[in-house]
Amino acid sequence: MKIIGHTKQLKFLKKSIKNNSLFRSYLFYGPQNIGKKRVAREFAKDILSFKQANKGLIAKKIEKGVHPDLKIIFPNKKGSIKIEKTREIIESLKQSPFSAQKRIVIIENADSLTKGAANSILKFLEEPPTYVHIILTAADISLLPSTILSRCQMLRFSPPSKDKIIKALNELKIDNNKIEDILFLSGGKMDLALSLANNKDLFKKRRNLALKCRDILLKECLHEKEEILFNIQDIKTTLFLFLIMLRTIILNDSLKIINSFNLGPISKKYNQEQLVSIAKRIIKTDYFLDSYVNRKLALEYLIIGF
Image (cartoon, rainbow, N blue to C red; front, top):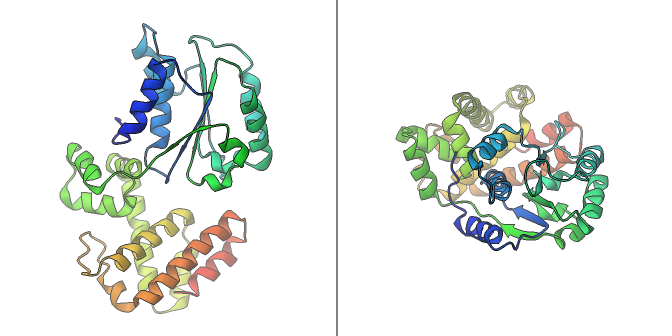
């Protein structure tokens, strides 16, 4: 899948490779699902295939995740990267490149590194082997130690315009009505929008979650709200969809919200002050869950504010 947008970042990175002016470590930061990870992999591909005759084979190996000189670290099911994983990768990097001139490590969601893992990465960044380049991606750089930030070439990624996302979806020949739903469900995030366009099951799952969010906001009975919310497994995505829904209503004065979710009744039930209050409660609930507060208690806190 081609990269949409991020032209300046791609130009800078390609020029760095061409001029042999690569930094030892990079930090790609910006909102989630806007293409940082895709750019990181493209950058790794360009580095590993530089002045190589078999560029096509290298690209295929990277796409399949089997290139021996590319290591990718990402959070576990609990959403964290632990020191055992970073130590394992760092130990493997003591070996020289297998088939390329460089070795690349991509740490996805580096803002989920535990303290111990972050410290092990920091020690490695202080004096990495000359053949190693590290690329970190993060949504919230405030969660990373300043000592790591100071050792990275930082590149900021911003969401593409709505027009660019629509253009990309039109190229996939997506129906106009579905495009409006995808724009809504993705929250204007390019990578997520493309995933929703290409994965029918993901689109259906996220659409059903959005409809449950709508039902919760419209139900009058607290017990009925709880019954829906407490039976949802993917709470993090649900909170994201709640915020999209509320933001859409708050910012859309004309209430002409063109998608299949019919948010008009919600805008009639709640005034602006109530909507903002609910949004703040959702953000706080998300924080509670990240802080490992009991799930049921966090959801009870959330639902009493509706």
